[in-house]
Image (cartoon, rainbow, N blue to C red):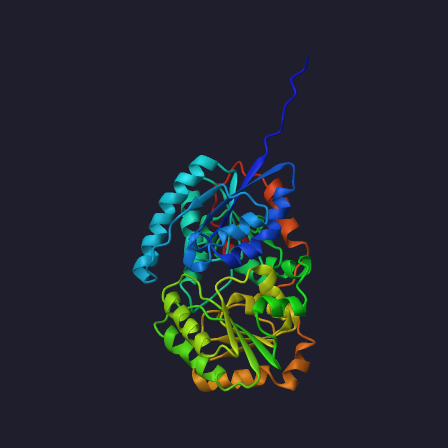
Length: 395
């Protein structure tokens, strides 16, 4: 009687540390979960485990996913010293978690310090890393350096535009391991059944007004002026009439807590026109985006997702400087007069007409399926990298 050999499932370990990142990764996680030849593993950390940020790991579990490891790493301090120490704690915790899980490959998205700690642990344990959203640039955030460091420690790369694919190759990654697949956030817009206007209003606890703004402002971690810039934004918003202001809270970067305190104070003093959410969740957030006039602040969602809704974006300051942008994005300096001028433009009838013909450079097709198939079929037996020198190859 012959021996029946069973194929070992390839173990793919997804890391998630923030609510926004999970929302983007969810369709990929679903693709992996339903593939009989793959085993999905999930490591949750960072803001997911923090009561201050809404314990959003519960959202992952409600969506039907099993979290294999929860790794605490965030200190209560949001100073640069606290962030640096959190990275160290993360490396220790992720090393233990990965030693238990023994994945064939790990997957991270983006550019945050939590992801960097996870990648350092993966790389040191000789586990190949797949990186989503490499090659991008955000001049006004330390995340810019984290992202490029993650790229150099990663083996496979999935970029959101062809420009970013070329940039990853430019910094020495072999073209055979770099794939332009489009943005996962755009796929979410297509795949999710978005909420009706009535349901959005019910969840907001407010009726939409003549104008509506979705506002997310994160610290510019390469600058010490984030609080001043945010106060300029609040001052500019005060001038608006018949406008609902929908705030989502800042992330765990340095000075994030100070910004969140200012949001809470502003909303408590302006309950007739302002609401705030620690975590809206991907479905509620994207559904709300559909019904607003503009996304305001410096979140990447204003750059990547908002153009697909033909919604204006007011991008304040330098945090997102360097990203490829649709023509619906209004870049503005963080001073009061410039923000006020940008708001007036975004809410004008002329700009609303202009938005109808906007093209989103991050549009892709079947993004999560393409990533899953590459993870499934790519040979990971020799994850040793050599620097790809473009001059030598072209010469």
